[in-house]
Every structure is written in structure tokens, then in C-alpha cells.
Length: 197
Image (cartoon, rainbow, N blue to C red; front, side, top):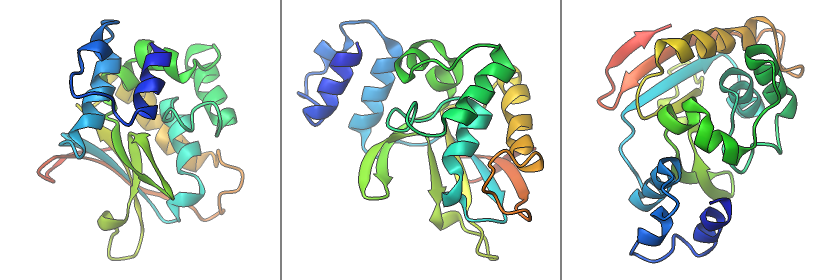
């Protein structure tokens, strides 16, 4: 499965007939491939996290600590300490590989919506981004987590408190002392506020 997926990426999305890529009956892999082929898919829900600092300094650490997974380019290469903290504190185990998480980890498999987008000077699949267009009047950036559907209560009760703890406990050691969380808000695709945490 993993080989076929990476071969698919190397061949720049493969042939138009996608039947070969569904041979392993892996719905998580099929979902990723559909998202790549869509180009700019509809994002049904967005979790917007606003703070009073520049997100580019610690967005991967924040996502790793609060959700326990990164995209397949960053996972296992960056923010290892924060990933370890999540998996040890929540499940008393070590972090899975990205490929294992793709199949077995419900937030990545069922909730997080990956899209193919520009990241710095390259493009990749990812479910989080710093949204320059959503900057508030004060000039603060917003970190967006793309969701196919809102987190269920079980995952919400794990992830949202950890998002708050990242700031109150100053998890990232290089974070400025005055860095604070401003808000966590869930919006639907029409831009309507669904929930504020």
C-alpha cells in the first residue's frame, strides 16, 4: 500500500483510470487520492485557532502536541518530542508511523481533510495551514485545521484541551512568554460559526 501510494505521487497522480489504486481496498488511501485529484476540494469545516504570535514559529509543534499526527512529509521528521508527548500522555504508547496512522488513527482517517497545497517552496498533502486571508484586523494569523466533519465528543475532549494546554503550559520551549491563545472556533464551509471552544 505505502509503495503504491508513493509511486502514485512520483508519477504525478497516475493514470486517469484509478481502479488500480483501489485494489488494496483501503478507504483511507482512496480518500487521499480523491483529494489529490480534486485539486481544490470543498472543505466542509475549518477549525480556526488564533493566537497573538506568528504561527510559523510553532504550527507543527502545536499540531503534533494537540492532534498527535502531522502530514506525511513532516510526520516522523519534525516535532518528534511533541508527538511523543501526545502518544505517551493520551495512549501510553509510542507514535505510529504516518502509514499506520492513515489506516488506524481515527482523526486522520475519518476527520482531518488533507488537500494538496503549497507549503513554503513546495507542494504537498496536508490538513493544516496558516491562513493569510483570515488574518484579523489586528494582524494576527489564523491556523486552520481542515475537517471533513467536526470531531466527535471523544476526540474533541482529547484534542481541544491539549490545544489550550499548548499555550498555558508553554509546551514549545522557544515560545515567547507573552504568547497567548486568543480563540478556537469551528466554522462551516459557508463561513458560519458553529462552535467556539
